Image 1 (cartoon, rainbow, N blue to C red):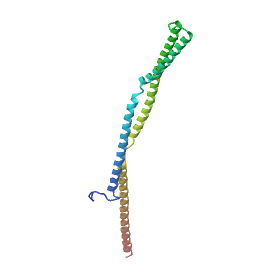
Image 2 (image 1 turned 120 degrees about the vertical axis):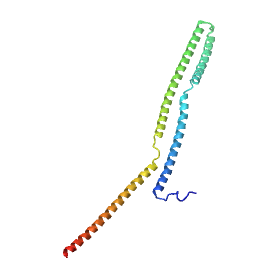
Image 3 (image 1 turned 45 degrees about the vertical axis):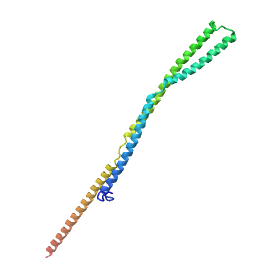
Image 4 (image 1 turned 135 degrees about the vertical axis):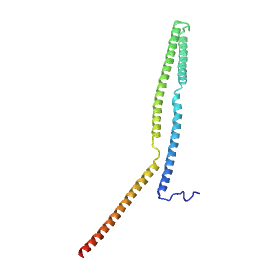
Length: 196
């Protein structure tokens, strides 16, 4: 149990400063806890933002779609050749296959381009989000720490100055009243002496 001498009396300057210390400590602890949480979340988000899109996975998906269309095209060409009774080695068959291959190659080039454009958009969005997150973190870190003790100390200081001013004014009034009384007594004595 704390010694009675260490517990300040309620309403005293020591009590006010002690309360301000407790408030300041708690406010600063909450600030540090919030900053720690925010900094950790920001660091985690940085790792995610730096990853970007998996271009290989996107291209693989696009090339699968191109391959499925190519397979369907080849089957369509076979049916067309078969229904017309054309030889698979004929010039017409070779021309149809060449067009199909060029189309497939163009689709793969287009898929590669689309993946690059999507990755660029993704990185731009991530950069903007990352910048906004950095601004939020900077705004939080620039908040002032608790000034509870400073404000309390200033209020006590100003109160002491006001109290000293009141005490000085009261002392001046007492002194003036005393001198006034002495002057009245002296004036009364002189007035009586003049009558004698």
